[in-house]
Length: 391
Ligand code: PHB
Image 1 (cartoon, protein in one colour):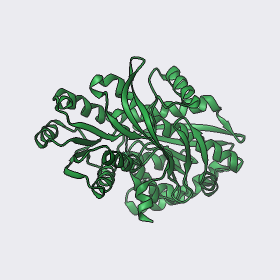
Image 2 (cartoon, protein in one colour):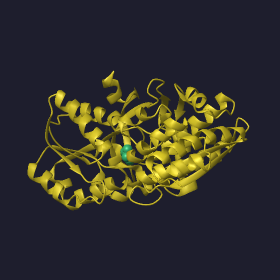
Image 3 (cartoon, helix red, strand yellow):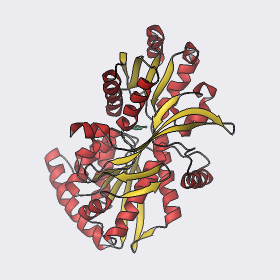
Image 4 (cartoon, helix red, strand yellow):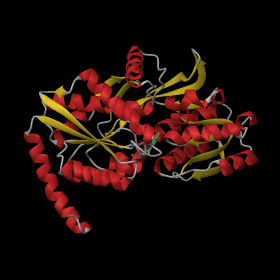
């Protein structure tokens, strides 16, 4: 049916209008979930899907008199798939909301559709600063990389770190992580001796690890998403860099609760900045971790919280609108929302629609025989620093 881009966009635009109108008439709220359930970013999809299911098991599948119907689609983290599936979900399934988005390119590919169809797009994983600026209907419940990396840079400056090699995944969130860390660190008098960017697909860390060894910085600043962080950590240890005295710091993707315990004692002592640890000490988090583990047999990680809190935003917004699914009404209800999450108190910035959350400094330690990120300092209500800097 869609032969040319022009025809494509006209047909979709017409269908989008109809879709919004007819879905609203029914007693169901349809949520389309786009996640990587296969491929390199699979762990992201698995964590978020598990958290969505847990939230619904705990809170029911009816809100404000409307039945919540969730339609899961696997986009494999390939943005062309995300876009095609989002079109199908809007036009054929007539979804009222689109949620998920395991990687930045997937979130960006769908943003124009959400803007055109006025369909709220809840970003539950992707972490590049600019995402929320690409559609007025985007709300983010995950994080931005700079939220953690700026705090990490300030900690490094205060703790005697002077000479750093930076190594990140060569795509948008990696560039954000590299840039925001570097800005803060060099302004404070620190030195970045080399910045390395590693291909996102099939990375081979070996030559870069050798280069780090040759340069001999006091510290390596590392960001990789999902499974890649674990692969990096394994290779770092196998090549004996752990014993070389070079410290490793970064956002908490590096010491992901999902993988941390399987990575072994080489991870002990690693310092990261992040918004969630499975060991976060609150009654709500203890209950969350216990229920999540019971349902899934694995630990929830920081990614899962984007899904759990994303469902909370949707449920509470529907309560406020009395079940109305109109995009503008839902967005108005979501802006400024503030609540207690297993990660601490969080809110949706009414100006940027981005998440505001605590960032914790953590150190990997053994607790009851398992490796965990143990929080030792809290920075409260951190906004995305990249957006704040633009103001
Ligand atoms: C992203 O693609 O924005 C992304 C994915 C996973 C992460 C962080 C960022 O852990």
